[in-house]
Amino acid sequence: MSDERIKDALRGATDTEDVEISSGALSRVGEVFSKNFPGRAAVIVADENTFGVAGEGTRDSLEEAGVELREPYVFPGTPTLYAKYSNIEKLVEALRGTDAVPVAVGSGTLNDIAKRAAHELGEPYMCVGTAASMDGYTAFGASIEKDGHKQTLTCPAPKVVVGDVDVLVGAPEDMTAAGYADLLGKITSGADWLVADALEVEEIDPDGWSLVQDGLREWVENPEGLAAGDPEAMDLLTEGLVMSGLSMQSYQSSRTASGAEHQFSHLWEGEGLGRDRNPPLSHGFKVGVGSIAVAALFERVLERDLSSLDVGAAVGKWPSWDEVEAHVRSVHTIDELEEAAVKQSGAKYLNADELRERLELLKRVWPELSGKLREHSLSAGELRGMLVDAGCPVSPEEIGLGRDEFRATYRRALTIRSRYTVLDLSNEAGILDGCVDELFAPGGFWAT
Image 1 (tube, rainbow, N blue to C red):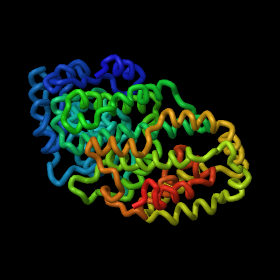
Image 2: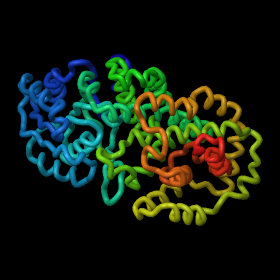
Image 3: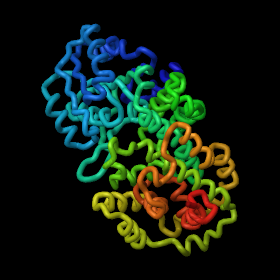
Image 4: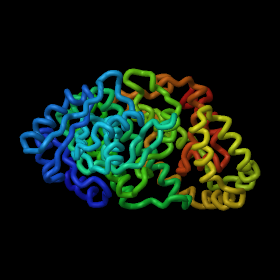
């Protein structure tokens, strides 16, 4: 763990003030709590599983530090806790009037529930991580199912994060693999930001870029060691996930760590893919398959010389907004997701003159942009191999999708976010369908 790198990132963070990730950190929870919340009482929030893993150690450390404790709130261990808004309501009701700082002991779902509940109670909170399963520990916002679909609810990141590497190494293998997949997705999200920057849609912020991309190759270099329980590999993974969350705080947007691969994941999550599994299909595993899909698309795009693009032909085939809206509505079957997709698609829609201007710019910048993309990116095959080594699913069938459903995701994912990615570039250039056809044709990357 690079303490200096974490300290530098904390200077730009808006919510998180202290991070301790180390071997034996669980024994120092009380000391860290007292330093950051002097004179305050604490209430542990966990489920039966995470309380058994780290809740007792957290309680003992808080008691030894002289912290006043309220009765813990412990969710049932089975069925697997799900991030539904009703669980936030239960927690808010239980903690209301306790005048205590919540100490969330758990991973993604538990952290998101506690994060939003603390926000609604007007309290800061502390997180004691039990698995390196996602980058949300230090990220603002909580991914919660509310009003029938998964959405990101506003709330600050934790003021303090503690992770004991000894505990993290002992987490279920699938959770660690999911965290690795989430982190590896920063390869394709970085490529998407290069595209958005070159086309003057969203300029790269040097600090936000640096916090994620400077250390990324080091953080993901040892998937085999991670799968084997190597503490050093776990230390690097955890650092990367923490830094990704801090970058989102610094930039006040998830752009630093999320691109088209997350659009694949968010679409599938909104439709409930894998929710009926036990445990449910993780966010990270969806991101991992999405990352391979996006890397494969980048490869097909880079096979084309877009500096000689026929702009007139592309503009001539460009659909009207009414046609786009009709298409968006036709590909979604969930009302809330459909309305959100129409809004997001409308926010980035260009008229014919605007499209012509952007495509002329694309032609001019393509030689330099394509070089940057080749230098930055890993191939779809390389990503797939790294994910296999980490123990992640890498095919649509492994996450419960048929090939036709998976193929349709390339166009459907385009609709759900206004963020500019390779999906938008290829769609505007009129090559998206051709690229996808190549991926699924005999001999293509996704050929069965």
